[in-house]
Length: 217
Image (tube, rainbow, N blue to C red; front, side, top):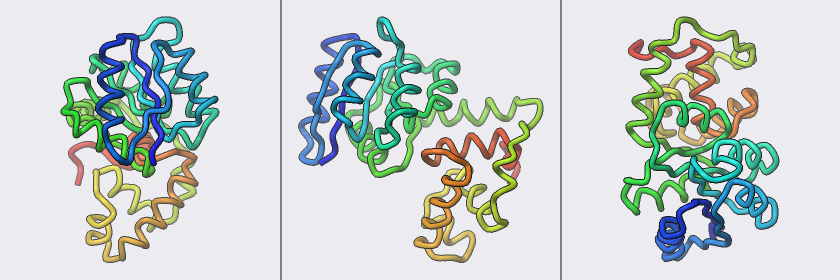
């Protein structure tokens, strides 16, 4: 059973999200609240697998709440679900440790799938968010010096490049001529060496370190 908390300052929206998620046999909503401070408290008290957070909430905003939850509770993953798709929210949410970012106009099934995916240790971004993320790094003037990339072996670097390009384990395995199980092992090592939680964070490290550039095969 995947345990979920929901934080949104609009009571009707919050109840709707909770109802959609709670109707699934493998999901249970263990807590609801209307602000970021309460979201952090609930995360500490209830230890959910996934915390679904809005961005704009009274008191502590969703981005700061995300950072506090992910820093203190490595087993709790955050899905940011918001009306606002502004770039500043996307980038700060991802850097704060969010494992997913969806807009509230997403179909209910997509939100459900996102919770399951994130709970399993993967990550998910709204397609429009992914496009803007790529565009952001395409416009970046220069790569940041990221010494963490130097710790990767040549094979691990190849795997990271494929991850940053959006490849699944099966697709990466086919591209590199190795088994999906081996890819899974490599991904786990890459995440550990980079000190990141999931593929989204690894992708950001690859772009910021200049390992991957938009439009370059």
